[in-house]
Length: 276
Image 1 (cartoon, helix red, strand yellow):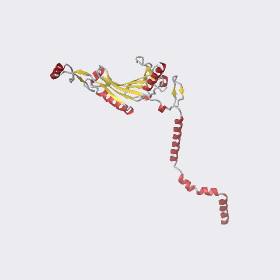
Image 2 (tube, one colour):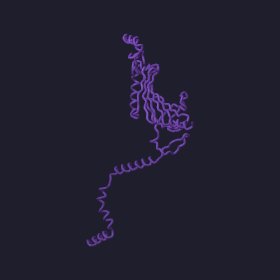
Image 3 (cartoon, rainbow, N blue to C red):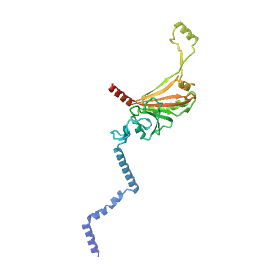
Image 4 (cartoon, rainbow, N blue to C red):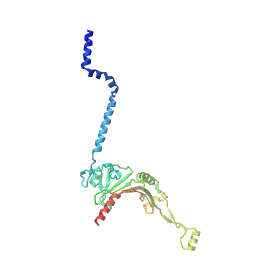
């Protein structure tokens, strides 16, 4: 019986060597088996990578002046970005395709201007946004007015928001400068200054006016009456941005943002020059 068993085993080894080797490798394979959770993670990572590759291959939908989808070489990330999630040069229909609701603003002096609602990237501090397309139906100007602030005569509240937004814009547009036009008030001359004027016959060396400062006690009143102006201008080769302060007669203050596409303005000018 023992001989029979030995003969069977020998024959098994001779005729089925691959099976024996495979079974001999089981210990190694067991050491390479990954936990089910780890396998799931690997497949999720692979699927995510595939989706990313497929997404990068897909071309964004860009609309022509008629609102039709068109193919374009540039991907969306390198289109000329305008504020509030818009894009410079888009048509009226193209902007509407982003889900923006446009209401005609007839009082605006810029052709094809609209109040814009449901913007892709709204800013909660802003109350109204106006977009202008011009006669060639290309977005070239965006203006926005903030909500009203219940303020003090010195404008402390609006100045706080003006500074905050100005500093944020400066991070995006480092080339910027603030402009302040103060109110000039004729001052009372001292007796010595009056004598100097009488003797010299001119105002050389005599300060005839005092100038107001930002945040003076009547700052908002002076802003409203046009005696004072305060704004900060930012620029790149392609865009110009201005943030400014304004007020109404009841000391309700607000700030405004104005964006212009210099690239589109230059393009219009070059077309005009070419036509002359």
